[in-house]
Amino acid sequence: MKLAVLVFPGSNCDRDMYNAATKSGVEASYVDYRETSLEGFDGVLIPGGFSFGDYLRSGAMARVAPIINEVKRFAEEGKPVLGVCNGFQILTEIGLLPGALLHNNSHLFVSRNEYLTIVNNNTKFTHRYKENETVIYPVAHGEGHYYCTNEMYEDLVKHNQIILKYNDNPNGSYQDIAGITNVEGNVCGMMPHPERAMESLLGSDSGVKLFQSMIESWREQHV
Image 1 (tube, rainbow, N blue to C red):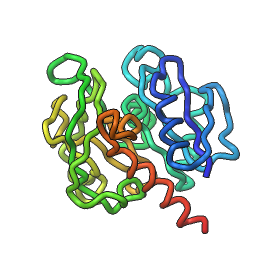
Image 2 (tube, rainbow, N blue to C red):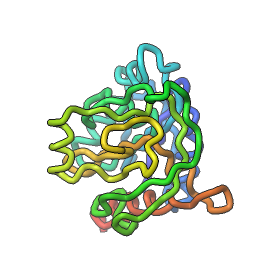
Image 3 (tube, rainbow, N blue to C red):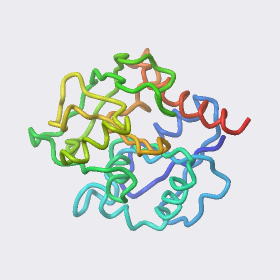
């Protein structure tokens, strides 16, 4: 398996994503936002940061980057796409995930380790976890308030798309939502950073199972 780590002007978690992928035993390469092809890759990682300086709003400029058409193609073909923090914001901006990310209720930038609950462990990104397992992922965002309408929320629940919730909501997200998937289950977005939770020595290794889940799910389909 080979994963593409997208790089936009302002990305600052691309190296963390790359290291998480390679630590999990797969090949990874950085892909510039100006590229127009993802040939040779099996999945996409969209890192956190401040793409295009969060100009207009987070993810708004990235949505028209040349590489985005390929990200949409990957999603349509059922290939795994993971967006974290700014990556989650981009996935909502380009319509691959429902809802939007707003300013934190506190209007402050929040940066800390966060306790969360895996509320759905029956997905390509979470099957290595136990149901309702508590994990520790760092958060670092100013616009992490996940917003959706009541109708959107009902659809999320109906299709089991909510995979991760905050135990102590740091940003005011609707129903404590921290991470979701698309209906098909191959596109995942979350505000917390599993790629920064790969070493217990550094505070948490809770993110290891997420990358293992994604990689194992892909391998099961390609044996």
